Length: 197
Image (cartoon, rainbow, N blue to C red):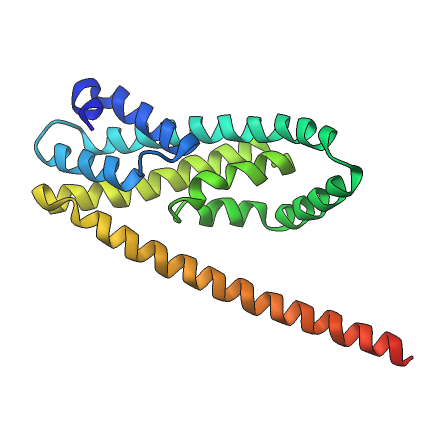
């Protein structure tokens, strides 16, 4: 984290860009520390949050384009059946793209990954960047403000985010499981009705 102290706002930008592309540096660590340093007068918390969100948006844009271009390459290697499966997944993503990208900004790990389906689906770039920036700024604002208020105890954020992540991912898994069960039940009943007819 010495990069934050040594390079100030540029360090925040670089770390948040890297977090959005390769997930090595968790945002809660960086922005919690930034909040603490802001409480000591090292940063303006608002500028640091906005710059962090800009780094996040830049990293997300890189993944978006890599996914968009990579799809063509990957699909050229495999047979056409994979193309159909990818198209079905993309169609599903397109139905909920804005909501998926917005909600993903508040789920560690998923925040980074959401750029991939957005790029594959060719989501409207301006919409993608707008949602990513606003969502990133809100998430970083929460983390930065918590670090600011907690001061030297800013590392408490890490435990909170860990518990929050497990809770959110568990809830998402439950929702997906329920929706999957309902869907397969519907398909099964439909198949039985078609057989009976």
